Length: 421
Ligand SMILES: NC(=O)CC[C@H](N)C(=O)O
Image (cartoon, rainbow, N blue to C red; front, side):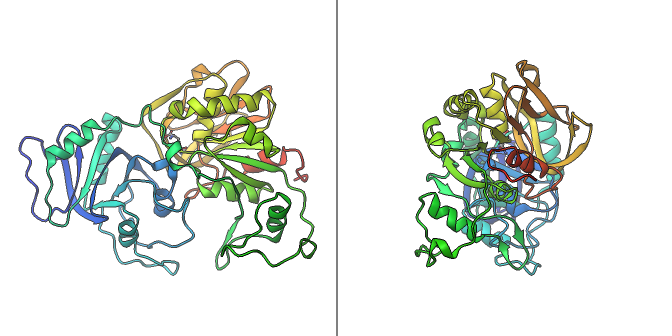
């Protein structure tokens, strides 16, 4: 890493990551031109960069990928967790090569540019990862200029002036703004995501406008549609959700209505939920908890079944009176081993979090159900006097293993109106 005092921009460098102390790592910029400030984290997944970049939980963060070949299968329209990338940028070892995959519709570097996201290639990403592991996740600026004109001191000042993720509510910025009925289920090659006719009938029954993908009214009468199997109604609070969570809830047999992060207890109850889902999301759970926790606490008082993932897990933890803590380096990858305490089974999981529930602060009516085999941090809780549970990791995968899909089944089949599994 170049030292602050002696720093000159090396010849040919078109991108840089600058630390608050003025040190910098140079490389070749790609994607959007400009600069962005955020927390630097590392992700160890070897597949799924498009899902990772579009996971809203990465808002405010720049991802250092440990896998050297990122971008080589291009991008497509299906492997997205939200409409846009939310990670501010990414750092990769090798230059992005021409896409080689039959599903590719756009090269990764072009996709990054079109979406206003900055990339930096040609970096010793292992060294950066070691730095994060030893020193904790730093605040940095990533910058890309084809002319290699970087004012390192100014960029360092920008990194130093950024307040950091601790105390930051980012859910409010990335949440969907409207109430919406969720449509997609599972994905199959060649067909894309399932949207079955019963969803359309439920759209009518639930009083939502019956319009097709193109915005045009649907041209069927209610009686033309098959009678839908009864499905429990899950109201999902979107703190910055990954779409694959909703798809998995549908796959597990639920119909899903999505509400914005700021939904009130009354708005949730008006939708007559059989269960409430608390989504993942970016930022500090304690900050988002300022408005989310009272709603969740009221739902618990009313005995509404609850399932939470990641930020949703942390918010459930806060709602029962536990504390959350900022982790030294966080967990981000697709092969994190987690032990299920009930039977000792180890699930290989997908992870993306920088905060954690402090298991030592769990009250008597909440038991820890899962623990990370990497560092012993809490990975799951369950209330002993309510139907409410949550996990820190990502059972929806995308990217990652599907060992933990059973959690969606457990939640949905445990709800009123569920057909026996
Ligand atoms: N994926 C998530 O929901 C992340 C939760 C929280 N923002 C964290 O970093 O711990």
